[in-house]
Length: 57
Image (cartoon, rainbow, N blue to C red):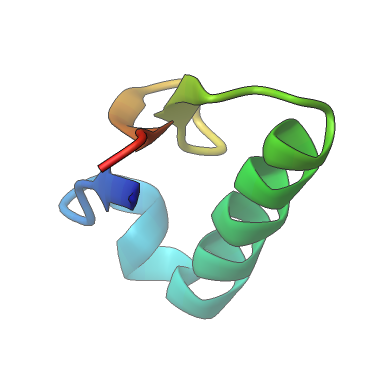
């Protein structure tokens, strides 16, 4: 199972929501391609806003 959760109530989502969504999706894709099975997600401003994980369900 792949689970991705992140908050969208930070300032960056008010100013550049589409850019931030794509940046996060690309960041997670790169981490998974590199072998990560879990990780935290930070917005462009450095706020921790969520996480992703891959499990064997």
